[in-house]
Length: 269
Length: 258
Image (cartoon, rainbow over all chains, first blue to last red; front, side, top):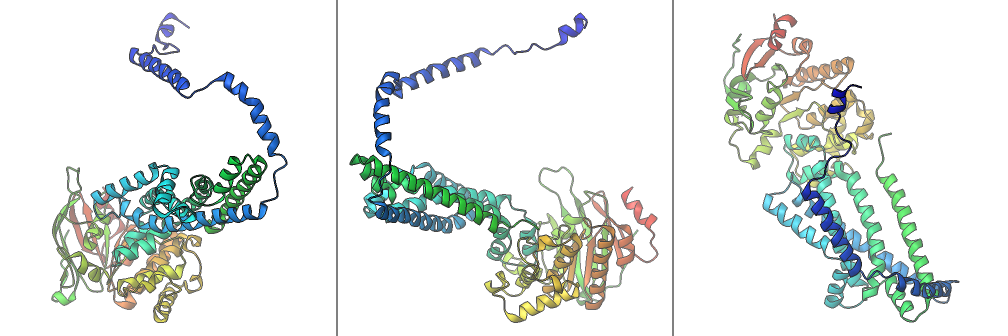
């Protein structure tokens, strides 16, 4: 290798720009401040370890004395999730059509719907739950309404994207033969987007099942209320049973949803 | 090269294009300008020209799937340009459009896709689903499939068909419209030679049996020579060829691509 080649070789590392160094330093400083604000304390963690061990030991064996009412609550939780998801999907479809580039009647409508859906998605589930508990009272109805909002925020956005990504050929073919706009959507666009819509809907159901568990903590019905009560009464053995039931529910729903996905989205044989 | 075709009054004219021009946004040059021609009923017309000469755009502008910038299109005596969208559907209904990619809804059955062709004339939502469609519509759809020799495939999903079969289903869907004119945009471009030949033969036979006006875009000069009565050629933004097919040779048509 001669000197010329050595001169032409770029250095292994670029010299960082002053602004990059400043940004990095600012990030490190902010992170350090965040660690302090997060209340991270190793002594407190060490002090808490025996408590953790005590609670964990009290969780074993899980209690079986309230299994039947707990199973009933798990069922209600699933029912809330199912109804909330289905209602959310039904509301999401027209919203998604109005929000999709290729079908919106006006760009302003599209922007308005997208903003509304973003707002619904941004507000946390617990905030929606508190709002609905205050509006319609304690119980599963408040939880179901929360899950409707949860599903709309999720599904309307992904449905709109699925509709935008669909091959426009079949829709053009039906337009060319004089079919109405509604017919084009029902007969071409929605069937073409169906695999994606089914996928999103099943993920919506899984998400709703997981979300529905915590809604009971604020009085919006379901197994969460049982969990809150057990924790408040220091019945960690009951809490363990509830956690195991929630785990089983989520696993079963994910398994069934995966099977349903495979059955509904048949690939070309 | 220009040929004159006898037009026996407006009744004998299926398609009339007068001074049509189109330029896409952001493009300096028009796709083509001042294109004029008249097609008598029952004539089979091939449109040829190199890539990007606007053959497909011309068909789409005739249907107003793309809006032309200037000029007029008539289906028979009905002026299509300037027609309100509400009335446009009724005019489109009598024109079958077969696309290069067949444009079937591949998750639905063959029968469902063909029944959708009936939406040209019947507005009822019952046609959305083949299971709800009226008996006479289902029977007519099956009859259309028989005409393209695919009646046995009516229950099959269209994504389980070959390219040639899919294109024949698209033709059956067009027949469901009871059309008096068919536009076909490179209908055999994605098919193997034998399947392409079969599809062109189906077009040709149907056009003859039903006295349909057939306008097809093609790059296959042999198809233009074999299946058309007249050839139109687009080149450098203008209609530069309009000639009866009889007496033309492959070599003469090839000049359109040089």
